[in-house]
Amino acid sequence: MYGINDLNKGVLIEIDGVPYRITENQHVSQGRGGAQMRTKIKNLLNGAVTEKTWRAAEKARPAELERPKMQYLYAEGSDLHFMDTDSYEQVQVSMDILGDQAKYLAEGTTVQLFKFNDRIIGLDMPNSVFLKITYTEPGVKGDSATGSLKDATLETGVNVLVPLFIKEGDEIKVDTRSGAYLERKK
Picture 1 (cartoon, rainbow, N blue to C red):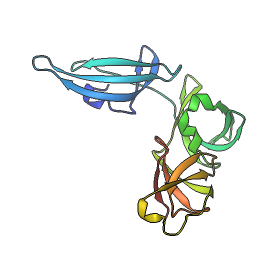
Picture 2: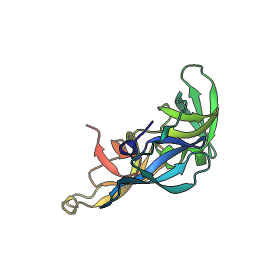
Picture 3: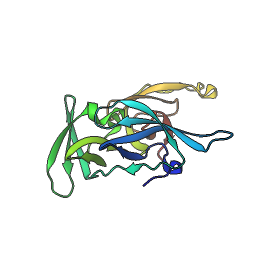
């Protein structure tokens, strides 16, 4: 069981048989009363976001989810195809279920999917990934003093803003939560 100090962003909990992910948390202590934790939680089955305040004595049950390792194979329309790395069974998952982080999946990437009652309900992506630049305009010499950014298209089809010195073919590190450029691969 989780106490209120364990209820941090990203933690998976179960309330009334439904899995939730904590999306925001704020520790609140009042003058006379005990400490509280205000959280925003996202229902992993239907995507609804609600707020819940936890008192110091309350406990939260960890969500019991299966986390099979799956290899991303390819996209077909709005569906993504994965293969279980142990059983070689293939599954098809809608991009709506997996969310925005699925945009940063490159073919052949191994990730963990969240399964609840034999139903895939989410994706556990690392906070950052390295992806190759497939298209970007060449930087103009002498333009680098301003710290300007330019558009670049990644191998997954996503557009990001990168510094002017980045060229086609470079691999860059991208934050999967915000879509921001972090660094060039050395």
